[in-house]
Image (cartoon, rainbow, N blue to C red):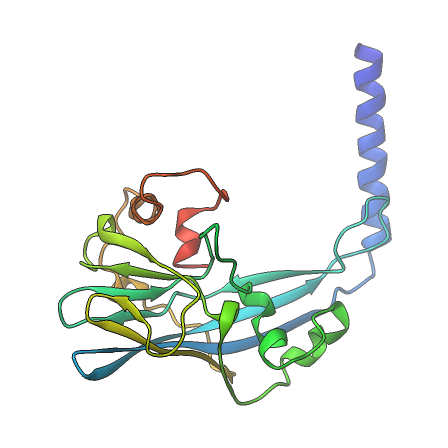
Length: 230
């Protein structure tokens, strides 16, 4: 057994050194694009919007090791847009979907999808050069959460998808649209204002996720915080 462990240790050490040597002197490519994600609703005859800037950073991964890995990996940063309602509630456009019946387009693929680029590694360098606004439709629209009291994560409920303009998504609230606008401004962090419970130390996002799932925690395993901030 000791001899086997020694062999495994030597193999891992040699593998690590070899990988380091192979990577040394190479420079990984990185491509970054940003867009403002905006959610607009109508309540009490007035339109209300919430928006935040999302950044997607695509990083090239070395391909010289013996284990195949994706050519690029995406890192997403940003806060979920929150639309505050006059009655103290809120509608949130989440950054990850968790409804078994609805799988929205991941944020890192949203620009390629809406600008009709080929969703492949070859299109990644072109993402940052896109300009303009695109209205989202179908599963391009993020999964939505309704909080009847935006100060209480226990009031989170799922907005059933798919939705279209004019659809009721909460009592007295109708969906207008969701859109992205390409931008170069930095990521915005406004979640603490829209959801006052966000900074509490007791992981209130977990409470919100549990309420959203109506106590049924069977399904995709995710970090509750990633629903609202990445």
